[in-house]
Length: 231
Image (tube, rainbow, N blue to C red):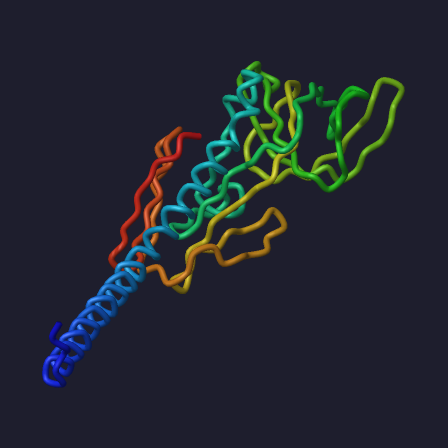
């Protein structure tokens, strides 16, 4: 049996080191490729995630309104952050239902509700029903004061919207949530008016309202999103 010569040993080691070098180079190239792919897909993944959160939240806002025909006919979308008082192209808000429906009757400047109604001071309420002429009407107000009566409660509301108020119908507790785009950042605006950054480094943001469809779109680098919410 012939032994391995020094030359053969050196050639074998050289080939092994060469194979090891190319294997490492291929692995390193693959790692850089995966890193670049990850860097490119991260903004798209985040945009998809944020889009799904908004879509789920907004579409869930109207579910509890469908239990009552009066509530279902009310306006819950506003092209600003103040119940439609001043239209903004970079902001919108939606009334998100948080309570249960209760009947009411308006008496002068106050509203009478039954004892079973869960009314909380300083909360916002949507009131829908018929006005003094029998036509459909809706309004939003904050419960400023509550008095207990023999039949239930009397509530004084601070009116938040313009237009005719309903004389009797159904009310329900809501929260006004909004979105504001400024300085390349989309902010989520809480019911108390506080702004929280939701999605940053946006190149553009837009929305289009065509009742009951809300189209929202934004551009972030190479990623462009557009999606529909049915309210």
